[in-house]
Each structure stands twice: as structure tokens, then as C-alpha cells.
Image (cartoon, rainbow, N blue to C red):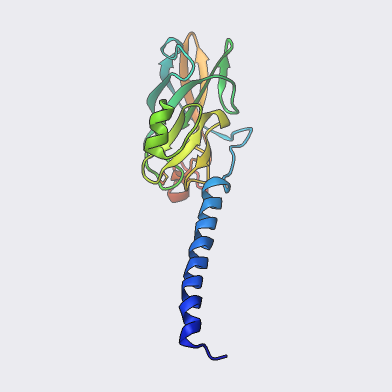
Length: 196
Ligand code: FES
């Protein structure tokens, strides 16, 4: 079939528009829906036992503390939170709920921030939530602590890896991390194990 110049006047813009809307639809699906949830039972890798906070420091729901967890390859930036309810992989002490996560974004490895002010978070991270979350400034990824660190917005697909907690005499300790420790274990060996 021979196309006339008049045919091309509508075929070319229509093709461009179809391509754009196809890409936009795929991107929307990817950002909103193609997320892997955290395992109900994290697979832990034993590590050093490190004091990270006194329970009294996390005196209210949504209080937090940043800390570093030692790995063979260096120090892993992490956050421990006090949560309104229990989450898989977290710790409950006398009715109070805690959990800790790596701060390395599972997309491309930027450091995530704990976003306690949700109004500011909606502006800064383009993600609106009715409770605090973890936000990544690099490509506006968001992770939900109430869903055990699940990626809920933006390009990250995988949840933030959890840090194992124990409590003793009013002190919280980190004693290991979830494996695979994404994205580090997909890039290089950490502590002798390797995983995609
Ligand atoms: S590195 Fe965090 S969203 Fe891309």
C-alpha cells in the first residue's frame, strides 16, 4: 500500500502519541504495582551484636534513630523505628513495637531518609501517605515501614532489608541483617554470601 503525504500527516502523530501513552501506562504500572513484598519470615544472616539505642530513646510511636551496622565490607547505614503495631521481622517489647531497616535504597543504592512529616514528604518525595515513610531523593522512591519496608512508590521494586533486633535490660541491639541484603548483594559479595 502506498501512503500519501496526507496519510502521513495523521499516521506519524498518532504513532508518536500511541508510543508515548504506551510508555506512560507501563511506567505507571511499574511505579505503582510491580513491587515485591517483604517475606513474612525474614532470612537472617548473623552478624555482630551492636547496641543501637536505649528503649527510652524511642519514647513515642514514630520516634526513630539512625545507626550504623558493621559489615565485612563497611558500615551499613540503618534506621530503627518505634511503630504503632507489629511488623514481620520486627520486635515487640512489653506491648511496644520496633523494627529496623537498611537505609540503602534497593533501586540504585542511594541513602533513604526517614520522612516523619508527611506533608513535607508529599512535596519533597511526590508520595502522599497518612503515616511516616522512608523516601529516596534520587528517583523519588518510597518505602512503607507499616508494610515491613515494602517499596510502595517510584522505581524501587524490592523492600528495604531488615535488621534483626533483640532487647535486653532496656537496650536494643542489632544482631544481624536480612539476606539478600539488596542492593549490595546483587552488586558484590557482602560477608561471604552472594545473591541476586
Ligand atoms: S536510588 Fe532510590 S529511587 Fe532510585
